[in-house]
Length: 384
Image 1 (cartoon, rainbow, N blue to C red):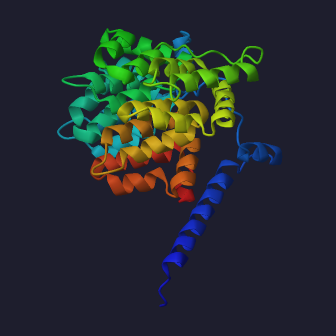
Image 2 (image 1 turned 60 degrees about the horizontal axis):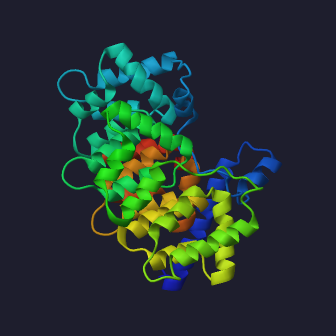
Image 3 (image 1 turned 90 degrees about the vertical axis):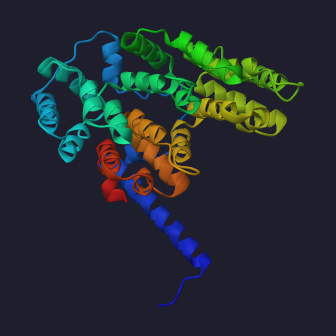
């Protein structure tokens, strides 16, 4: 057989990636009308408010609306109990039961399980499995807002704070979901989330996280968020950064956190027109370390949320060793918006998240994450 040159191999890989991407788009638009397909494949308008990642049921529960269970929820609860009954856990059976739940279903299962069997599901998961597998099961055994409360708890418990787990949960969130998260944390752990963030962080990252946890994003108003105001805020951003000796991080973070996504894009364009590069580039120049990473994530969640999440997944698998907690958190936290995350990841890196999981993990933990990915996007197995 003739060996392909390096250039030919590269071209073949790029061609394969393009075929995958087209196939993914075909799957997503399979049952849409021609007009709907056109809209789905066009770049979306920048949103008026930051992205919600919780399923609708989480927002309904926050408004004290009643939750209805069906026989399928009872069946999942019974299957989980059966998988953990007796000596030893039937991990294969447990994975199948737990991973069969999307973000909405697992909210119902976590509540119904205690009603049926008199025990918190997360306590059962903690007892039945340990390590990365056990932690992922715990994240999956509670509603999405409580999952995030658990991640915050993991990041702040003990000596030192795991800032790299903390900032993705707090930064770039919608006002509504920050409020839901604060209530979930207080209900679960009896502490105020804002006070916790204030006491567990320091320096410039502290300034960013404390601003984000307040949930101060304005609603987009075309009468207020004008082109003239965008130019003023672009100049204020510049004066707080490159125009002075020493960066005024607090002023920069306030502009980013206060501004709704559509208006951030207006500031970004005004900044680029006047100073020659984007807000992203400005942050890269002005920030350092974990603060820079968190600030870029905050800005990214406003302007390019799905690409930003894809980069977060990649970072969990970069370097020497995988950050399993971050990888689990990404796959589980973003389940309700997973299709767009998956497409962004494929477009950016030419591989699926499942490809990363297969390469970076093993054992029951690997099988669990792959099952969750399959549930998050059932057609993904046909796409790759």
